[in-house]
Length: 238
Image (cartoon, rainbow, N blue to C red; front, side, top):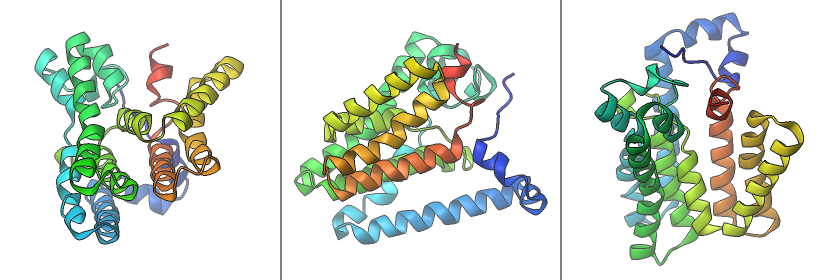
């Protein structure tokens, strides 16, 4: 069975003995996550138009559906956390569940980007701020899923598809930077961190709009809080 490695951020927090003890209390950790996510969702709902704000909890719950976990369970009758890298991710679903499980997991994750964008287009004229807010709700659901007691995945598929639609040029440039870093360093952890941290900077430089910059920056922060070299699916698969 795979051992779930802690993120680099959690490892840093554990240097403080008091915080380390608190992190070992699952109820307290869940409470803190719940307060944090609830606060963010409330802020998003208040910033969006009233009708869009009503979609916030719906899209959070939709984003929380663990498609990778469900598909691997259906095809292998096992929990994905105990297989491969231990991550609830589409790459681990492919690796441990096979082509069908991985493909269906990808389809489910892609729908988490397409559904908010469709709702934004259908009801709000594809407003960029609404699109960014609704997408971040799905991302929060992926990261802190009530169906998994506060655990979750990385939402990389949601981000890639969302920005491929909303800002394809900055997304392509971020991928180019990522590949360049991989070529120069052969470091897959640094590669993936480069992709998600250069994206908000590129969006800012190319004047893609504050909502998209904040969406990319918010995701980069969430990703950095969860990822570690040990939890990097690219490293595990090598």
